[in-house]
Image 1 (spheres, rainbow, N blue to C red):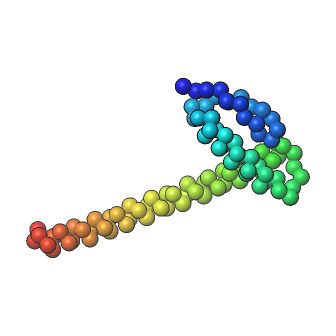
Image 2 (cartoon, rainbow, N blue to C red):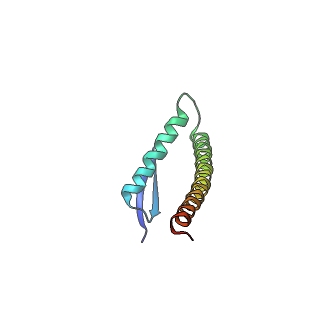
Image 3 (cartoon, one colour):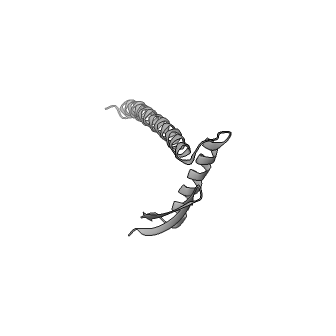
Length: 97
């Protein structure tokens, strides 16, 4: 069941419906505010531009993490295949199959 939760981002209040707990939503808000502050540091940009720049930064970070995860997944599968091969050889050597 989704609940209505009020949040404040950049001084504006938004009412959301979320299946997540209010605590989790507030963590997301805190993360978003932190990223907005990082993007705004040393810049003079309006709110819309700040939101778009932050969105682009987050999208870039997300895509890099997604790519890294895919590479890690492939490495895990490759390594598991090697280990399976080694185990098969050991079993064959020890049990004469």
